[in-house]
Every structure is written in C-alpha cells, then in structure tokens.
Amino acid sequence: MTSVSGEPSAVKPVWEKGARVKFHYTQPDFAELILVEQAYRASPQPGRAGHGLYVTPAQPGSMPDDKLLGLLFTHPRPALFVNGVVVLRDDAFPWERYAPRKYVYRTEPSAILDLSLVLIGVGTRRRGVWLWSEGIYAE
Image 1 (cartoon, rainbow, N blue to C red):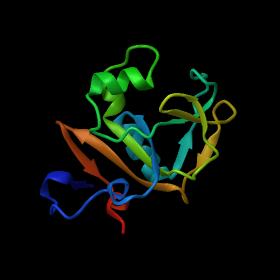
Image 2: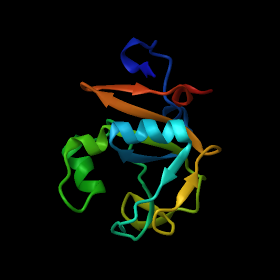
Image 3: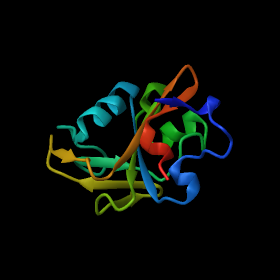
Image 4: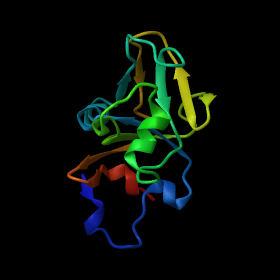
C-alpha cells in the first residue's frame, strides 16, 4: 500500500479524477482480506435493508468519523468500522438505494460475491493515515 502523505500533489485517487465509485466501509483487516481474495462474503445476519453488500458514495475524509458512523450504522460502532474501505466501480452491481447516501446489493445470507472485475482497490487507516492499494491511483 502507498501512503497519501508521500505522494506528489498531482496524484489523486480515481474518484477525484471523475471515476464513479461506491465505498464499502469496514474494519482494516476485512478490507485487506477482500483485496487478497477479490471477494466479498455477505453476513449471515441481515442488515437494515436485508442481506447484501452495503455501500455509500461518501468519500473517505469527507466527514468526521462520528458523522460517517451515524450515516452508515443504525447502532453505535467504534471508529474501527470506518478505518477500512473497499472501493468499487459504481456500476459493479445493480445498487438499490434504501436511504439517503445508502445503497445495497441484495444477496442471500452468506453469499460470496466475486469482485475481481469491479474492485478498484482498498484503503486502511493506520494511526490516522490512509494507506491505499495500487488501483486507487490508476489512470
């Protein structure tokens, strides 16, 4: 992964260059696992909109953690839950909007989604610094 702090100012993530993406926030270890496996495993427990892959257009750093946590989760969660992010192409799946700035791709419980063609990259925040996988800066 590459640190944002050491990059030249002209280097920007794909969403700042106009690419349409969705963000799936999670714990850092889960984001890294998704990158390695190129797959997403849906929870056996339903979320607010049922089973599936939940995403938002809210970009990393676009709001304080407490506001992002409030946007994404019904029940209080620690900041660890927004210290990892998976960046997917906007057209990855037929997203269903279920609340403002919240989308889901509905699946069966415990479904495994192949992300190999739609995963742009992941980010993990360690000690306040976002570290990004290579695809985040693709041309």
